[in-house]
Length: 337
Length: 207
Image (cartoon, chains in turn green, yellow):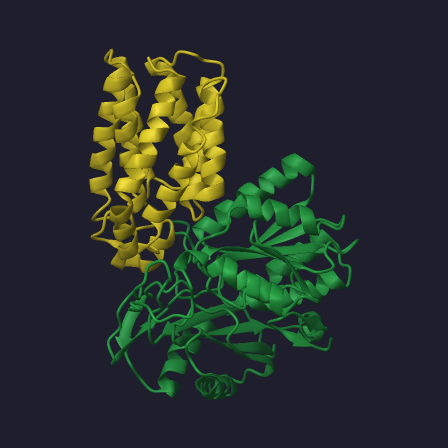
């Protein structure tokens, strides 16, 4: 009797068995510490290069482990599904990837992730004197940013940041410059997501929330949590409008600056719908006289099998375009290398 | 007065308490969080219980080890928060074989200050701090009134329970529940609930 139809053996073993699979599938590129649950770039530490460490709960694949490799991350710490990893993991990763030029922690703005990375940075500094800088991504316009809340969530921009900052680290830019660049990328991007279904966390065994056939959740994060509000289902054209409008209201951008448009599937939405939505997004942007200079479409920061998608817009300049186009070779993103 | 043996008894009782209430904490967390608070607390406190057969110089050394273990095993936000609580609690107790009510008060205060620094929560944010703040106040008042460790902890646990119940109508301003905005009202905060359990366990076992 299967009360939960998933391709797993035991809910307890999902993360470690998936890591085993990553190691087996990409032996030329990755080294996986199964005990600490950290995925390393095979040739880490790269001498003289700033090390990039990210991590977070599992269930968002390919983020972050799938972005380890040339031109992106040096290490990714995997937590339990939707649960932050712990400082021991981040400490181990930080020590292992430091090539003498310091380490950047890339952290999505969730209370648990921020606190665990904060403790790890304090410990790394006290134990080994490794220079650690941290960037916290918080691009989700669904959450009203205020001094009195946990603030915006880190979502789609995290993927773009890991690619762009990874390219800069590969060029040998120093830690301070890398940290400033990371901050700039985060500040130049905004995202908004929607869900058509919930998702089932293996250890919970049932969907996190229920949604009627005629409704969708607007303003979701990436943990199967309910969104900001529930709205009546509508056409792709109308849904694209509801995602793009709040992004444009908030996106820092001067007239004439091009953008990178990123349509991201949440895990259970087919690419045909993602491309259809990309077309809608592109049409809205063209009407607003905004040039899409670069684009990305696909499942990159997911929420298990949730159906839905998010839109991220990132304002570009020549430096960012050059870094975006630079070679990257990871299981989840690969071009030019 | 409490001793190292009492602290051992407390941490053992705490693991049993969290296991017993795991489903209830997870249920509270599924309403406004991500449905793992009970599981995470049960896993972390069980890891602490596994340390209790080793020998320790004093209660401070044990509490420090317990704090590190919680940070490594609980995950999420609760790991750093409860881990910091025990780590900081150890400071004022260092070298003390006999823990008087005032010593424990200083340790609790140091622990709660650590929680507040780490979590940056204020009263009314619908977090565990809403149970800790009134508990500290009640503890100190009981000590001033001449109560011993046990009596003061019972006063603290009762105040924590009131604080926990007071989180129900609040709109969360910290943690994952804050993303729900007004939809977070009408539910107890899971962190305030586990804090109350921790203090009730302490009242049963210390002093």
